[in-house]
Image (cartoon, rainbow, N blue to C red; front, side, top):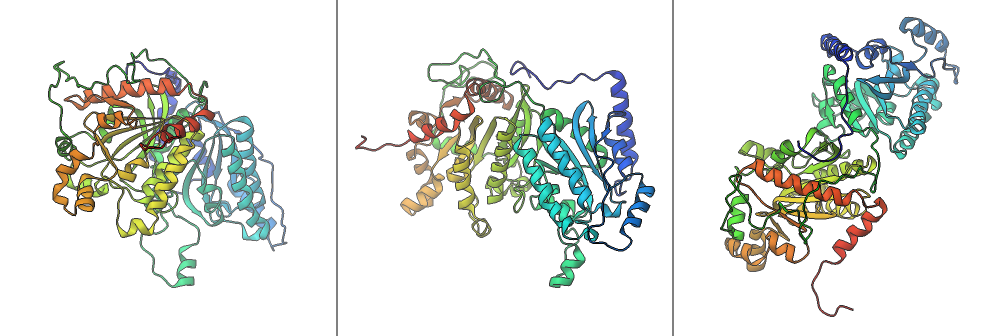
Length: 560
């Protein structure tokens, strides 16, 4: 892409290093996916050759409850596995990116967590916080180490607290779920990653299948407590084959590199984009321009816009993401219930600047429409959006929301899972974010389902987009008891971009081109200018300014 923010994330790799990386990739592809790797095998696949330095390698467990034969068992495992305990910790580089690394080895007493494992994990997080380094941990464990009694149980709280300390220092933690990850490890630091990646088919869960069956007598589904199960239920960001982990981790580390800070903690850069007196970039035309340069002379009515928005051929958020952003990496799940395909989110580069992107995708065919629930999010979709926005805040990434929904889903299950609560939390918490938030209505902006992604510093609309308190059909049904008067309602409601600009709701109108590429170019110019303006604002001022923006909205008499 042309122009934009200074690209801080470029990385030069020498030919020798490229060859070494290629050899690593070949090596990874040859390891069977189902094999449980030893610490040596895992380290060889992940870390750059010669880069690993072990930390805390001399620590050994005691026998706090006097469990018979425990010391002898540990000595035998040490001799067999070439390691003193069930986790290896240290510092290394992955394709040149520095990180702290933890590798649990299930061959050592099922990598159960006793005092030494808990202490080494805790120290890893503490070093990461103190040295401002990311942490990556490959988890594979049967849980807390029963041979060490209640002290082993306490390691859950200790490691979780250390993970929170590391997070509070603004550092990245990637948890890679390997086979198996269960019990006290799954219920502590393994589940606390900023990004959680699972290898395909691994066993992951708190209570074992046999314990569950014997306790409650329920038969369990085949994919229960698998990587695929936790992805479906919102507890993992992605599943990655083993052969892809090394380049994936390197990319994530690179995207989270600390950046030179200015203003809101985000590098500022001028795009030299002319700006009209209204604050609208010069390419945001009331009369759009086609790629041929011929102006469109006829403006569409609200009814015509509504019909156009419902066309399956118009570009949706996915088109603009592919045209505007580099290295988009999708993250899944709300960490409470599930993953909602009606909300798409992740991180990407916008002209060299790391950003968080949240969108409401729409389908281009019936199967895709069904998969995305016709762009009507469930509560877990809004909770995923809030999780990603908070993640963006932690790493000083601006949030860009692409809004395109007829409204939040209103089914029984949505109410059972707290649809109103999820939207309310988004409204309140987006208001307090200390990073720039930009929202663009690119299609339908339906009621609270759209506003849940619309609490922002600037709101832009494509020139044929609509933004309404309720969709026109609902308006006609409720107020006139006649949903057939939908077109009449659309004209009356004044929900077009120009109407909303006049009321101080819409800050910018982005001209639409006859091609998705042309519209994306206009959208990119707007985003460039908006980020230039907002990235210089001190972070503590953003929530106050955002609140003041909404505080001005309203028309009434008797103002004092």
